[in-house]
Length: 353
Image (tube, rainbow, N blue to C red):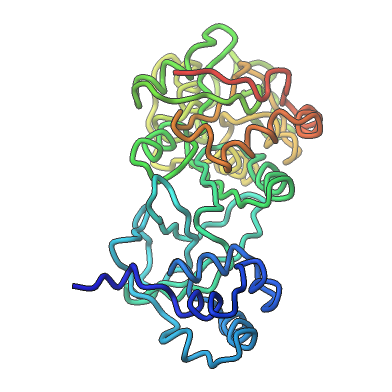
């Protein structure tokens, strides 16, 4: 019985017949070599423009190379989390040897075009990114978009950063649908909290890579009369609360001594700021960067360490190696130091769990 998946792609057959390398075909057709590799491996159905360019370079018709412009979703791909709509734009990335599809979200500072559209469980692929050239990070760093831009410029890889609280990020890492999870429970008083939390949720065999140290505290309207953290804990009635499992929610619960519930839950530091700025919340807990950028008052509560957790088995992965090099670079550390409330003194340090 023949195995269709092992059959060479028509593009590969015609390229080899000309004794061209993938680099040579990329040059002749004007598309990235990574796209040539993805097309031949069956991971990418090219756009009409790219398909025409490849066909012209190989002196054949598009139909001879690509029998269909769509590919059905099969065992080689799955949604990292369920999309909310029937028709979805998506990104794709390889994690743990499997291709995952991620419903497009408005990511902080991100300008990545979608890799395709899914309609009625049929994938219409259009992107030029190889799934194996994308690193996926879940965390709540409001400067994640800046990190993604620097990462792409320095490495040539793509970084997708999904805004998630630390607890949710670790769950996604445990499920194997992201490469990296960010958490910031370590404080000056309890410097091992990140490692303890990761060990409790994931077990051993992981690394923690320091991204930054930062200030977390209370954000207030610019004209708020409250002058101290203790006064806020006593007098504020309407808090913009983060979700359970996030470090910001833990910080607020500690301040109030008694946890409170809220019908509205903020899913990011920026959402907390917008709630306060919009006037429906009196105060909330977030990092200094978001408060100052919004022109609001900030009362520091504690200094925290933001660590990036990833499997030890991925330490030699080129995508992770590129991230480590970036965080340890002098230019990146200088940039981090210039962000309000951030400190890069320990950025790039590694800890084994």
